[in-house]
Length: 399
Image 1 (cartoon, rainbow, N blue to C red):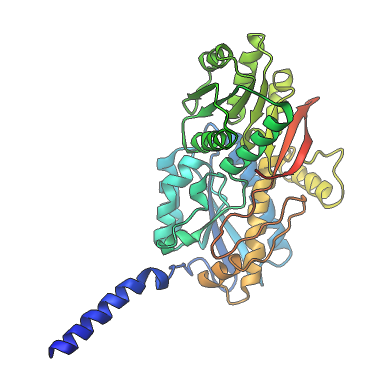
Image 2 (cartoon, helix red, strand yellow; image 1 turned 30 degrees about the vertical axis):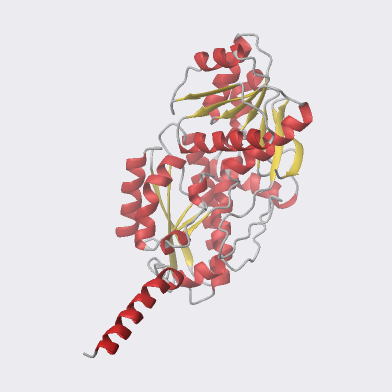
């Protein structure tokens, strides 16, 4: 081979290498699509510490699948949902995901539950080219993607992210009530760290020092040390990076100490169970929120019908979690319908990134994605527990 030809060959190879990241294609699976069916999967906590989330979420998803199938499916295809229990355990989530990818041949993973569980299992999906859509965690890793890693394009989230929603709610509360000594108590995992990041970023932007930062181990039930420390540190606002049981535990402990302080919860505290189970202890709690919680006696139209149907199907009242599960499947169906009759992984990805807006029946902010932004929206509300109900205090907040 002549020297010039060899040099040309090397130059072409070098050029090909430099072009790789720009042209590297995202591999998307076509498994789980047949002429009559679309197979989707989900893993929820049905038996562990957050089954009060997992059970209603999976109920909401089942309800959506039934509704879609009863009305003829998606472009003529019925939906089949595979549901696995992850027990809020990362190892179980990985095994469940492997089973669904290898045995059940799912087309997409929809609404999987929990920050640590989703984080542990998502690479199983990405390696197989399976879309991870609308997980039940608003941690940043579920929507932030590195453009140089084409498989990361497979993740989309429609929940309000913990960092942004905590920042928006905290800014509103600080401006409104002029707090001087904000504190935080957070779970020591991916979720809690995101709430802590939002808290820290907002205080830094406002040039305020936190009076106290304290954490607890996931699954803990005694918060006396944390609450005593925050009281001793003179906190006037406590941000809670907690879930249901821990929210009630921390506020009960404060009441026991006769400590009258304002509490502001991150979005997972904004559920019906907190006032239902916490009763007097949680009166006055503020929380960041994505949408108003409907109550049967005040709901109207489609929402009222939906609440009635849910109760008929599951013999329990619908809650925030059920709405989120229902919306996850309805959002998938909207974009799959848009992808057309000859559905494929690539067409689904294109439909999701099209910028078309999905609107739910619950008057939530619109869901919309693009090629560079896989997070639906960051519009936040603040709600408060008054007389055992969540009441809207302020909507349309940004930071």
